[in-house]
Length: 367
Image (cartoon, rainbow, N blue to C red; front, top):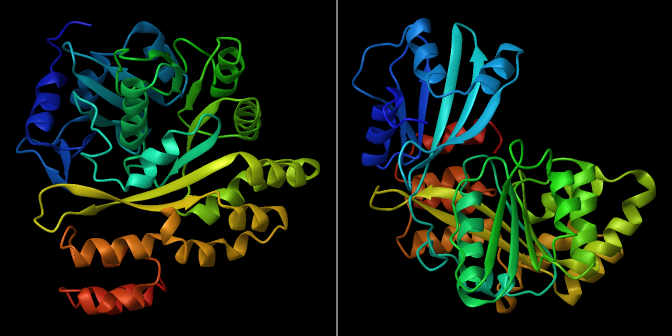
């Protein structure tokens, strides 16, 4: 790709402004997501033709053909060395649109992200399943990138990643890091997992556990002596376990609970909350660690009791999201209003809220 596509100027602007995403849509100017909020760029409203030509200029013939057949596009784009952007191109009423994730040029470390020490401890596991979960745009890729960077820097491993698309490019340090992109270098996550098991891996990163086949393959890989890292779009540790069990056929559910009780290492569920000084956002994480108590609850099908065990599991590094949010407010690390909106049990956060309009509003929607 040449580095002179017209869209590159907008991408550069987004990077300079420290935006996390850029939105292109017909009838409005390009929009930047800055610290969680959408703001327009000072530019005219994009016409349908202009929006189409901006995006089509960087597509190859195969991508144009796929889009012409009604397929949404997911791909990464590098206009200059070290610069990467993750594109999602789709149709909406009025014409073509795109959302672009700006991938930082360097991978953050676990320390820079301010994640609790238990995350590093979980990443040191030699086999099993470690999950990073959260809603779209909650920083899962950034956390996984930091975990891979930590392993790459501190251990001699063969690390295989399956991503859709590849975001952070890892240079091999102490470890060998092999990155494969779903769509261009492998057909699907499940297919990539099957191939990875023949490639002598120590660690396999699965960008998204999106279907029963991929989840089953990941469980098999974790059971046979590999550390498997994966993501799910779930918002708590308990919901994550339910999602995994629900995805399995009825005859495999008991086996799935047995697997989790023995091979799950932990679940890290995260949200991004505005920092107290308004400059950027901080990852706040809920952590579940597989302890004998959690293992026993899984074996006996009592997952609903897991949050209660997590609440009292501080000595093992466990904490619920609300506990982590309260701690971050008390340490003046996050904006209390944003923390209130992200919390599960609103009552205990009301006393910190500075914008009183939020309180009745949220109560109305029963959050």
